[in-house]
Amino acid sequence: MKKSTRILARFYVGIMLLLMYAPILVLMIFSFTEAKVIGSWTGFSWDLYPDLFKNKEIVTAVINTVVVALSSAAVSTILGTAGAIGIHYSGKRMKSALEGVSQIPIMNAEIVTALSLTILFVYFGVQFNFITLLIGHVVLTLPFVVLSINPKLQQMDPNVYEAALDLGSKPSQALRKIVLPEIMPGIFSGFLLSVTLSLDDYIITAFTRDTSFTTLSTYVYGVTSKKGTLPPTLRALTTIIFVFALLLLVLVNIRKGRSKGEGGKR
Image (tube, rainbow, N blue to C red; front, side):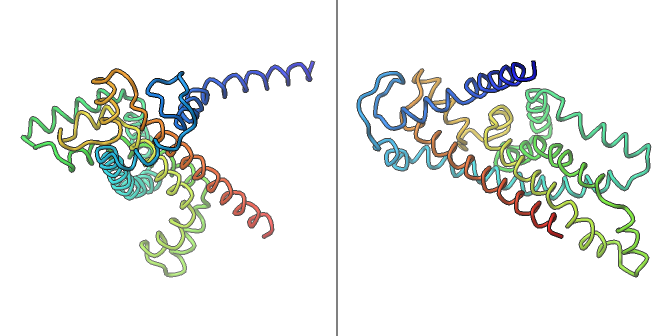
């Protein structure tokens, strides 16, 4: 019975992984051919990759996307860290209320957030530019930073912080030397999550950007809506992004494994 259950579970996991990664693998395979339509193989070729970097529109869109993602992630991480610490050290009633309020944007539909921001900017006569786009991405990613840091704060021994204060440390010193090192894994996870959410966002970007500012998501939508098909060079870009994300995931897991090993030795 156990053996059959194990086989069924592995089969189910295999089907799920196949459904998740098969479309990406198809794009990766056809990134090595110049065929304009996926499904027709015109021979092995690397030409899509140099063509990708020659396309100024794609290069500009990628740079803009990375700049927005890193900027919004940095702002969200700073504000989210301060917010999570403030929530953690609040009173019981205030803490539960603030935790509930901080989770509303996560449950809320993204289109509602985008429309709300657009109406707010229009009402106050704010011209859409990089700042409005940055605000939109910070609103999107900030709650996830708080969500990533909260568990680390709950796992932390509160007596260590109190001991630092009793030994003469100022609250700012205890925060910098005791609290922040303890919650650093949560801060790092929140930053990476913010970058990921910002990179592939389309709805908030489309509603809060200046029309002359193109990100990767808006560029792909614009090109596919006009031509009706995915441009061949974007298959190469998809492969590069997937490989980069995979390498980053491997490096993070290696780092976690080493830190656990060092912790076990101690």
